[in-house]
Length: 238
Length: 302
Image (cartoon, rainbow over all chains, first blue to last red):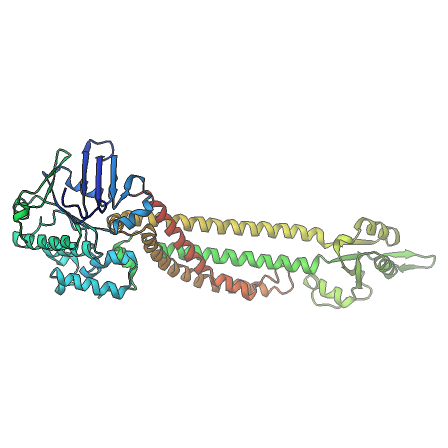
């Protein structure tokens, strides 16, 4: 695992976790790893290896069928679902398909996590506009997702994931719909977040990106996970 | 710009046609409920009036009679009336005895005989209006015996007996009205539940997203209940708006019957206020039903 900041509890801990959908085969088998606060990992693996399923366990869209999963020092298996919203509010997710609400503007989409938390509207407005400017969408705050290009939608999705300053950021193929130049820009954005303490996990296929940004990898193969340390981390510069 | 008053827009309800029939159903249901409640309250008022004005009294009827003397036949009716009055005045529980005069009897017979003055010689039964202090204190069998002894042509007309039948009928009508109201409530609740289920299915992806970004079940349930509240209020107001003139017309027709049995079927001001508040009750009921439906359904999700 990466540098352990002081002796803070791990953000994520998997212990012999297995996941199957209904009566189907086990998608994830004996998953065992932990993420220290402030760590940065790529999640790699072939299509169908279970990357999205692994992420879905981390953002509480699914629960493990076996094993122990702990998020922010809270054991998910034994936690009442009433406490899930509190846990989820510490997690920012960039979905592969963005999951933007088409009837809302970019501004309103980004505002959603704060709205559900009951933050005052004036405060929301200030934060949302600031963040949209930061991701380069200041000109598109009133645009609705169907009128935005793929890369712009992605940035709206990223802004929504970041708006409540999550402790854990999970991104599922965030560079899948953008060219290399924008992919690099997005990665730099995630690295900036990581520098201020956000734990980041990015699921990606993009080998060149992994080469350029040599963070440790969580590699999935046939539902099993291997943690591969970074080989070039000492020479890496952002 | 963010429109912060339109929180329900966090779900794309504008594109959801699954609940568009809700205002129409609410309109019909509230229309029925308003008529039913108005009817039930009117019957209740009538029963109260009957109880207060009739159960504390009874009527003694003295049939015309005569006695044959050695010279001729003499009318004995008034003599028997006097004996009846004497018996009544000595009976415990009776507070007032009033012998109806010809004019008063004429008024009572007016619906059948028209507005005619009763002739002195016309052999009509004499009526005695008796006021009772506490009906339960009156020993009716004893009174009957006494009258049979001193005034054999006098008969007791105890209003309580036929009033009890009327009250029983009115109570049945009231019960039926409340049953109809209950059915209306159940139908409304089922309609709201069905509409909410359909809407939940339509918005499943958006709801899942709201959950994943940290929304509580109550937040999502509130979005649905606010929308249901808006729809229900609109329909319910129209329903009451349509029902009120009908209630007023029927009330006016009943009051035209004056002193008949259906008189006093009118509503008090607070009862009108109650009927006018039905749309709010209906809308709140719908909103609460929608809230609980969503909350129960979301409990089954992750």
